[in-house]
Image (cartoon, rainbow, N blue to C red):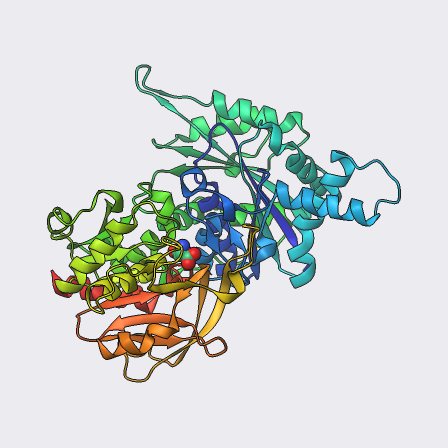
Length: 532
Ligand code: GLN
């Protein structure tokens, strides 16, 4: 069949869960046997989110092909198990960069280069690219931001044109918000009506409306919205708050969101898929009664900064029949005096990834406490590096040991800058990024956890373990148990004489999905439960 394009836009407010709706639509169509992909177009000028501070933008998610992307791509992969790529997240910055490069090359043959048609044509080209290249049945495109923003306009114009050109092969799902005014005890549809008017004013008639709400919306209310907004009543779907985001596909399926999409796009609806494994996951999740507490030692005290880690932990909790309670522990506030008090209540500790000086000593302090108190500990990227620094200081006896990132003058640079990174001055997209193979040593704990020798995991860093010190580490009980076969870089360290003390230079959290939870997280949460 010809590739069909579903656009997901949002109105009224941000943070309504557009990414979850896009991921759910993908999940439901995939469950019907269709080959799908999900992509995100973001209206900001950064070429990619790699240079953005997590406070601005939450976690930066990394694809296997090494693109730094929006965290919504993490939801797409966790929901559907698909692999996204650099073509799945495009920003205004990337679009302009492409257009300006073409202009400099002379591709526009002397024409004046303008937002319409040149920017909008480039947006359209990128929106269609995945479909053209890989012949997906459905390409779902989420557009970041909210309708009415100045910077969204070129994207909406591109969607308007594509809807016109593709006819029933293109469709727009618009997500809005229905607030409840407690003083009046009423749900209000006016913001939705305004938001749809805003879309209509740029020439887009939404085909389906998803109404985010905290209260059940009556049929009368939904019919009213349908009536005011020119959509059919069955095309008004509610998205009520759920105990977990993983419930959303089921709620959408119950309301026939996927079958309405198929009907509107002229595709035979067929049988409703049972979503068996997904339901079993949810059932197990709800049955779990006991809680395991995991401390996240990091410097970003906001949920979104460690999104994939939180999701990986909670998935692993479900498969261990436990609820995971993740507790944020600000590494800037950890001192030798209070470390015991801060960490003792935890069943396991994750030392989080990060960049720069702030909060570093707290991470080292936490690593020290966990290593010497048998607390299951998982160090990820910067976390792994700080495990190594702590070991060098307190076991190898190098008091000034550090990462060159933190102390460029240290005489014991146990974490060194990678050769390939030394002369880099351009910060955007130049780290060691994306999937690399790694060989696990026979007899190691990680080898047993993965159950295989060769693994592939995603990276995002400039610094690495300094192999000059490896022999000394190994003589003293910390082993380099995962090594990159081409570069010989140490990718995993562990202490065998500890219940669970593993650090990974890569980010396993990027590949844990609902139906395929990551073995390291499964094993770590299990160890934390045993430690209780
Ligand atoms: N800042 C460290 C490096 O660049 C670690 C990065 C990370 O934790 N992702 O090597």
